[in-house]
Each structure stands twice: as C-alpha cells, then as structure tokens.
Image (cartoon, rainbow, N blue to C red; front, top):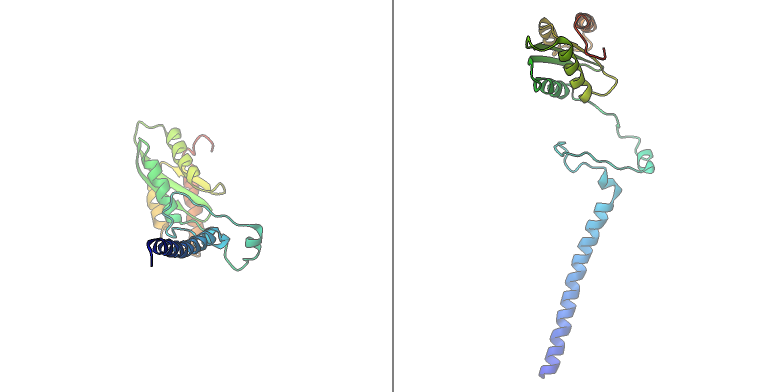
Length: 185
C-alpha cells in the first residue's frame, strides 16, 4: 500500500468513525431534547421537597381535561403558616412573645408587646403580617391579651370534630375583639 492510498484509507476510516460517534451523540441529544419538551415532564416538580425558590407549572387545556383522576386541590400546612406568621411578627421591634393558631378559615394571634408600643400599631402590624401570608378568605383576629396565648395553645392539639372546638374558638374570638384589631378592623 503506497502512502497516498494509506492516507486516503486513514481519512475515510476517520470520517466513518467520527460520523458514527456523532450519530450516537446526536441521537442522545435528540432523546434529551424530546424528554425536555415532553409536556408531561413540565408538570413534574424538579424538586419534590419544595425547596426551590420558584414554583412553575404549565398545562394545556387538553392536558387538564384529560386528567380528571388527579386531585387538583390545594392544601395549606397550617403549622408552617402559623410558624411563618409568628416569626414575621417577632421580627418587628416591640413584640416579646406571639402565639398563632391557623384553622381552616381563621387566624388567631395573641401577643405580648413592650409598654412603649402603641396598641393600635401593634394590632395593625400583627394583622398585616398574617394578611401578607394567608389567602384572602381567612378571617384574622389579634389581641394583646397575653392570657389568650394559653387558650390558643390549648387548641393546637384539638380536633375540628371535637364538640367544644367551635365554642372555644368563638369564645376566644369574642375576647380578642375586645382588643384593637388594627387600622382596618
């Protein structure tokens, strides 16, 4: 085999091998793109723990209509919401202790504040903190009556089916309404 033939043979083999390699990579890339563009993949959370800073979902009308079996209701972790509200309030100067209870439709907040803090301002800050976190249909009640913190605490392990539950909630709300409810209420 002369040099020219060997060089031609070498170039042809290199092209064939390179072409096969590219075909494999192209096939993998094509599969990856197909998976990324699959609408079913878009609906799956990338981080099921919910630790992402963004939430994103995209559906077409057909996808939603063709998926009647899935439960599309939204649930609220009441303990996490109560925790968030309490922490937000305590970040404000003048609040010493805060107890928050979140029910299916109400938020009850009792707090102790410093003597220097105006009662109306404290109530307004506590209420607005809850409003900023909760959906709009929640009724929010606040009170600087520190004794109500124990009442709220006594309810946190209660069941909604408990016969005294509604009576206790209504009694606490009645007491809370004796305190300022903020600028709006």
